[in-house]
Length: 171
Image (cartoon, rainbow, N blue to C red; front, top):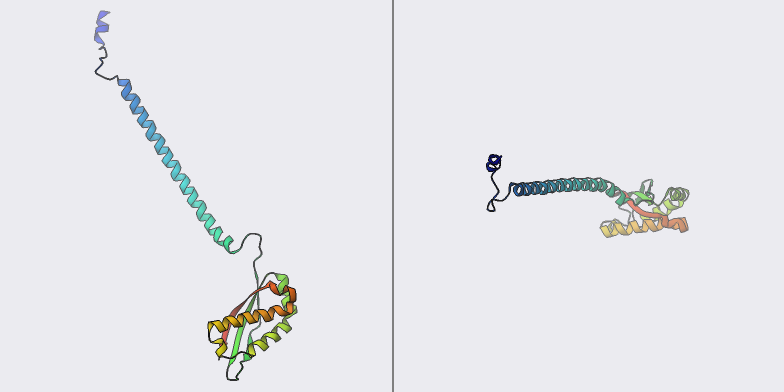
């Protein structure tokens, strides 16, 4: 039996035990595994965030134009106007589109359309070609058309939100 114990070498203080190297190797492998899992998780999370932002971006542009809970505007295209301009040498052909708050306002505009058309014909025929040459002149015309359109509607006139020019020809 003495031969058996002599065959096993006794550890010396100079040589570190083999179990310490294994412990270090296991710790390093565990650290790298945790880092790899954390990196993979972070990549997945950022990918999901990017997909969410992209999806919301498409919806966001739609909702930015129309806040939730509000109705879209109603557009009412008026029959084209053709009038002789003041001075007698030129005429104006004008297409007008009204932007209205709701359908109910559209019905009121239809009810008052004869008076609105008459007021607009008088307004347009009072302009000269020189009045309509500049962008300031055109903007002033739009504002005057808005005022003349709102007038017959009384308190509901504010529901006519804007006047848009569909076409304009001065000859």
